[in-house]
Length: 375
Image (cartoon, one colour):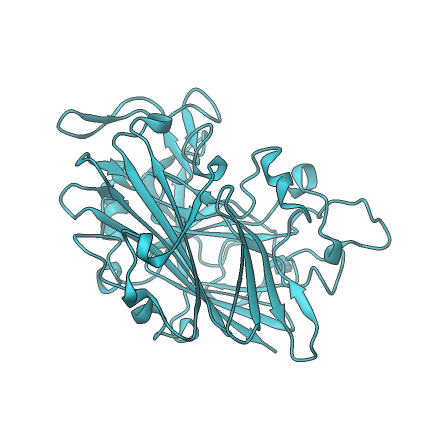
C-alpha cells in the first residue's frame, strides 16, 4: 500500500507481509525523487528468506534467553530457540516479521480513534492477532500499527493489548533502516552520513549477545555519537543497544490503562527540537523523537553477505548485479532495553517492566516521529 502525504512530498510503501516498509520516497526541491530505503525492487523477495529488512519485530525484539520465564501466577514464557539452544531472536522462528497484517479502517480499529486523525497526515492502519502460545508467548494479543505521513514528517505507532486477560511481555519495534545517498551515489555506504545519538552508554552483553543487565560507558569510543560526526570517522561498530540520556518518567508511558498520547499530540511536537537521534547527508536530514528509552543501531555490516539485489534507482552502472555494499544501510530499532522484564536496572531506565496486562495496564504503545528536512 502507498501512503502519500497530502502534497506528495513524502510517500511510504508498506507491505502487508511482515508490515514491511518497502519504500520511502522523498520529493526534492528540484522535482526529483529519491528512495532512502535499501532493499529489493520486488517486494515479493521479502518472502524468500528471513532478513528483517524494514519489518516489524515482535512479540519481543532482539535476543532473549531460552528456558521458562515466570511472568505472572500460572503464566510462563518459553521463547523459541533461534540463534542457538540458548538464544531466542526477534520473537521466534516465524514471528511477526513473517506474518501477514490486515489493512483496516479507523472504524474497524480497536486501538485508534478520531484523536489519531489529522488533515495534515495521511493514515494507514494494519492489524494482526497473535494466538496463545504463538512462538512460546502466553495469551492472545492484538497488534495494530499506524503509519501517518505528512509533507515533512512520518509518525509510526505500534499498539497492542491482550484479548484474554493473560499477562505477557511485549517490546515491539520496526527494524527499518536508511541510506540517504543510495539514489545519488550508487555505491554509497553510510560512512559519509552524519549521526547524532543522545546516549553515553550501551547495553552490556555476554558471549551469546544476551543482555546482562549492565551498562557500558562509551564516551570517546567508536560507539560515541553524542556529538554529531560522520559514521565512518571512526571504526564502524554496530548492533548495539544505546540507552537514551533522558528522564523516562517525563516521557509518554509505553504501557497504560488507556492511550495517553494520540497522534494529534505526537504531531504537535517537533522531533528536531528534542531529537534523540539525527541522521543526515548533504541533502537530507532525519530527526527522530520517540517514547522508547533507547535504540538498537545496526550499521549493516552483514550486507556484504546477505544484502539483496539493489532497487533500480540504486543500481551502480559499473556493476549492475552488485548487491548493496557492507555498511550500506543504517538500521534504527527504537524500543526498550534488551530483556527489560528480566533486568530491574533496565526496567528502571525504561520506566516500565514491558509486561502487558499486569500492574501497569493493558494498552501498549511504541511511537516514533521522524521529521524530514530537505536541504
